[in-house]
Image 1 (cartoon, rainbow, N blue to C red):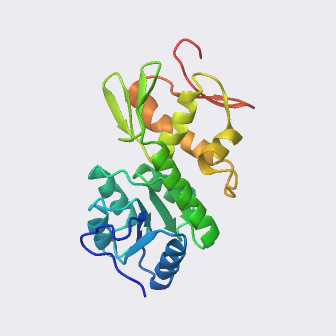
Image 2: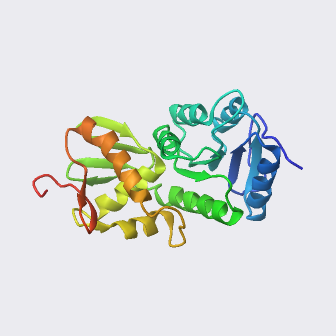
Image 3: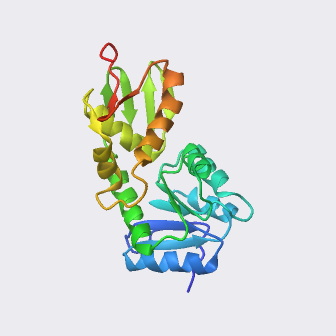
Amino acid sequence: MLREAPRSSVGRHGKLRILVVEDDWVLADNLRRALEAADFECDVALDGITGFENARSGAYDLVVLDIMLPAMSGFRVCADIRACGLMMPILMVTAKAGEWDEAESLDTGADDYLTKPVSMVVFLAHVRALIRRSKLFRNASLTVDGVTLDPVRHVCVYRSTEVQLSGREVELLAHLMGAEGSVVDKGDLVVGIWGPDFEGDRNIAEVYVRHLRKKLEPRFGRKIVETVHGLGYRFCIQGTQ
């Protein structure tokens, strides 16, 4: 039976906990069943306000979030979760297709985006990838050429200017910074971040590179990511562009 998330969430069986915020009962139940079959613990909220109230308890390892929700939109829920300082991965699953909705999802703090209808195999693969990434990036900060990336807080800092990033943006920037000025192939970025079985648009790395540039370069007053045509991308170390 579909179970709505309680107001106060406490782990019951030591499993990773996922909150599904979806107003379609049938889809919500299908997502819940798939997650529980994959050994996750899952709660469901059927409107945006309830979803936000439960998410801000901090009890969840991941939030699955629709955009078109009663009471409060998914964009607002996502933004308010991030405003509370909560950095669990957020996966948007929505019927709203198009690059503007994907862009707004990322800008409000989502880590990933899937368009309905989506197969449960693909859905679970994205969930596992986000969980895996969140574990990998609970590490110390990374500093290259005066730019510091804090994967725990999801922030990038340069000369006391701090910019909040989404989880995917953190992961992509970490890959580029880790190469320390060497070119990273676009295909290698896709495989490293989204996994070898990723079946979506292979240009997704370009979308995230654009977001990083838009967020960081005007604030920092310096170039952050350079496109090396025909090869890939590299983190810009001043004096070497």
